[in-house]
Length: 376
Image 1 (cartoon, rainbow, N blue to C red):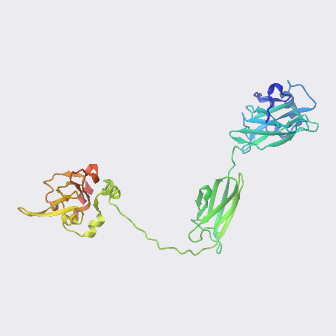
Image 2 (cartoon, one colour; image 1 turned 180 degrees about the horizontal axis):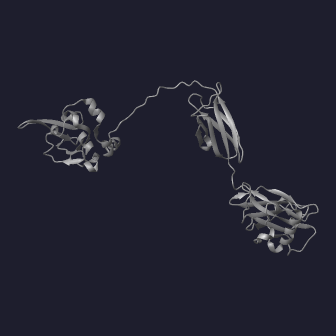
Image 3 (cartoon, rainbow, N blue to C red; image 1 turned 45 degrees about the horizontal axis):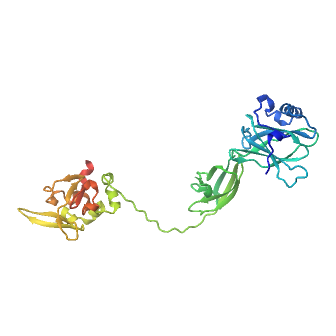
């Protein structure tokens, strides 16, 4: 597409910023006062030699949503090819709006269909044909850019189709827009800030199913609708609700985090309660990898030995009670630690590879959490 250069133009595109009293108008002047329009054109094109076959094309670029002028917009005037050169592309003359969002072209050919396109902020106006004809030498042509989207909304009431009673607590949503609200006690809802166009509103209620309605959203207005929906019998599968209560003491000390990690052997508070044991040693017997040895010198007691590899080498574990490491001689008699009634949870780690750093033990570790610790 060829482009005219300013040095060869017999059409002058004004790129300079015009003074405020040049051709800015207040709303009253924009109502089409012919003498004022002609005067503006004369002032703008005072330095351009007159030509009876041409005229002045001027106007403003406006935001279609707010009617505010857009300074610095690019305005393109498309001129048809000269006679005899109909196969050539249209010629383009560029201008830029001033601080009032205004543009002007002088010596524009008359009785010729021209096209004006404006662009700003990545948006482009529609291509509007313009003709300077009749007795007037001046033509005002404002260009609208849709920069500000004027949102609309949908207000509705959801009622029972048989009784007419309002349906409270139903969800009114437009899934593809991610918009949704609950109906109030009057069955009313409002979906606001929606783009213009057709919107599919879905109503969801357990007793009424999921009916839908297509609503036309209009710019700058709220569309009111009433949805009468019939009651629907819905067969539901049985719902099982499980409530899990975790002691804060164990939660705070990371017991359940390690339990979910899958390393080690664990006895939870629920498992300990189901076992109904009396002695601590009875709880330990059920844990794989732990050997309970009964010694009677000078009195009888139980000692724990852990097997840590395939050879089942005997090795004494490191003991931790309520997070504190205990000395080996203290832990020789495991039933002296506490009764089974006083123990809340147990962790057993066999070997270094599965033992958390805070419970390190060369031959494994046994971590005991007591109910006494919950008050500490």
